[in-house]
Picture (cartoon, one colour):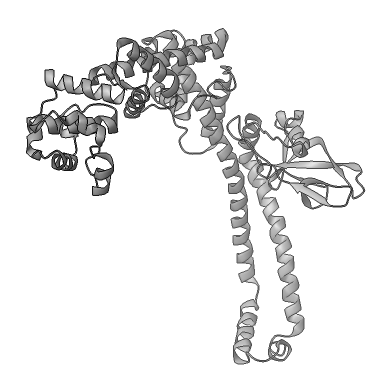
Length: 484
């Protein structure tokens, strides 16, 4: 019980009412004060205090003033003995409670195993839930030792139920595959188990391919979809944390049902975590390729710009003329200094440089992909799953699962990868369908007409309105791309 109470709270919760005065009428001294405090304590907590110190000092002073007994006399009251037992009986009868029995403890353990343990793993909160249930059932909670036994029994029942349910979902084949991971003579399974526990380390080609291999090996275990779909994330995380600290010999030392469930939780969690990490890596790689290409081209063009003679002088003349004649029109202030023809040539050159910049970025992207990232992206794209619940994206989804895509037949075009032989249906302004070659980008799957400008995946409705949309990459069953 909390120890700090305001005067208003004391008045509302610790005041003795008519029925209470009838119970304390034939008592005096420390017995009168102790009985009154036990009565109000039980009303608030649904249990009796284990020690006198549990009763707030402010409540002792307040009730002592009500019953006209010195507050110091409360220290003389004892919580054990015939008098205390009689007082407890009076209070239980007055409030409609009864002592707990062995049958009650078994029923409470069953209730905890079904209602609390699947969603709450913290022992203190399980204990709080038990006390609240005892109060709801009008049962005086058992003593601290008995409460601990009820909690242990409930956790054991729930663990048994959880293991049985997991094994049933795995089936005989899945169970056998998991058990083989920790078999004494299975070096391959031991190696996979050790690899699952290791962090990938710094991002690189070798670590990426290692993670892809690891993910494919875990998928070969054939864990069913939704193995822990109806379980709380905290529960699965607790079993994963427990399993990741264990060696194969530790697994073999546990009961078989617990061993299987630990391995299932570890493999299922790591499969999802590796998939998520690869999805994040895919997005990061594409952005990295683009950013590096732009930085290189910007640096190159900036250097070329500095080599052109006269530009700095022209800029200085324009600035000086603008400062000297801030109120004058451009034709009178600037053209005499530089010349209209020169300015037009500079504008044309700037526009040409913008086209050159975009062209060089595409070229740099292509070389970056073909020289290094080509070893990373095709295996990564083939490993990840792409999901969407919008039929408008179906053509691109079909493109990603087409034979060229599955075989890694990607050809660079800037940030996009050409999917050979895939025709993307579109409609013209009259609502008629026509085919269009499609390109699938790694982040925003876009389409572009052959030899034309890139455009978003979409179609023209019969009423002439353009409908466009974007599709994001997702991985495995952990992420989804809902339409915006």
